[in-house]
Length: 487
Image (cartoon, rainbow, N blue to C red; front, side, top):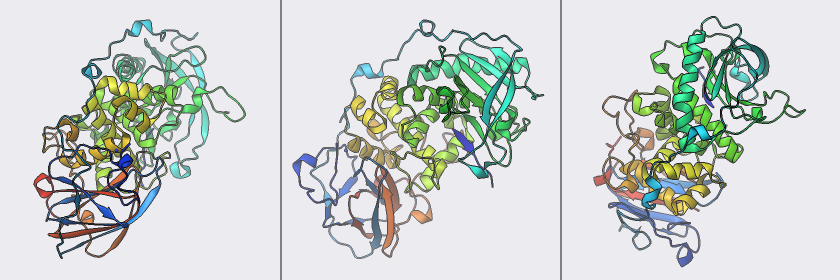
């Protein structure tokens, strides 16, 4: 769901007891100039130069449990205290076999998606949808019924437009069906799996309800709305516990988004079809149990793979990544709920994680992760053969080093984490630790980081960074690799 509201097994050297246990000493690829800080008795110290980046993270729990720590910098220098024996710097460390990078070919005609329902163009049906005229009740949004006209029948979808719509014509409904059939469907099924069979059919009904946009259709509701939605309640029959189910494969598309004249949302309805269809496909395999960043990351990646998204100047996608770069500390890859002070940042973290995996391991690996019986990080570990703690630690480095190295372990190809891709982005992505609030504080400051979460700091002066806490890990990324000026 995309909402707009307007108003490594790897334990790296950590501060856990037993840090010298050889069973916990797994190797992780370390870029030149990156050092793991060594902990002793819950404290770590390391020399830093002006402009060095300090990454603080944890992989101590399978959940999004948070861990408190303190951080400060001192101008009194001490000897470097880096762990240099439990990590490996190697440009060829951990790769999938070449077969994993081959295109995934499938015959769409052979998949039973053409089964049609007994409906004719112009027929009217009644559906349930969310009434998004008042988002102050989020997440308890009321459901309402509406009548819709079947205005287009595609190969894999049927397009229903609100009966009270005066702007969306039959020809425009055909355009929506063609976008789904020719772009969203082949991209999502190739990369993420096949749609579920619901009530004997895998066809998808695309609904454009006015209530979904607060009753208007000429543009997005300025009081808040959703660009599109997949509601997993529609996957189950009507029951006492599920009274508002439509019991079929349904995607909701905002009619105001389709008609919007705002340049920031120009043609945004096209990638939204891919985004929400990915959610539907994911539900078939994971029944809504995927973590929020991982699942939204896949849906956002589907937009890029459909030819849209950040590489083509998408404002919302830029906002997601910028929100995560500006404030990553409260977000975890294992986060299970949308309730978060930085919900855009959750999307941004997921997009960066899934794009990194796609760039590093390729299409086949992404599809195997998406259709695996295991979830999220566990599926990734099985498919790549790399412990999840290990892979996360390499991703922590890639977020800083991408653009400074050709080593694919530390490189994004899908987008530029510190730039605007030749003016194609809505605005420049500044990268992590690029803002004043990310400078290492000079007084001891209480922080916290979630498991499978990370925060980045930049050193304002030469001195010593001092960290205190439990189940925390830290890397120092030296200035020669740093992309950032000192705040």
